[in-house]
Length: 69
Image 1 (tube, one colour):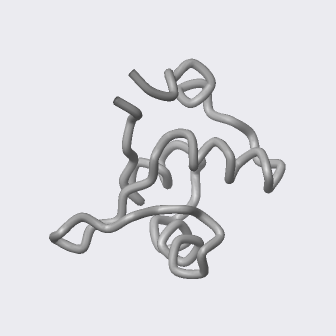
Image 2 (cartoon, helix red, strand yellow):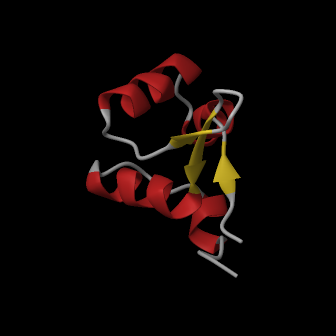
């Protein structure tokens, strides 16, 4: 199964504020879904695609993560 990241996970990985990650999701530039409880989740592949398309560094954790099971 593909790894899922919270907005806080992403903020720690790429060193931005969690509210920035939430804004990217709300604007539709970072693909995410919401849990039934309303929490945002981002698939590792979608996060990697976002980072590449915005020419941002790819954290080592994403470079080595598998993209499925």
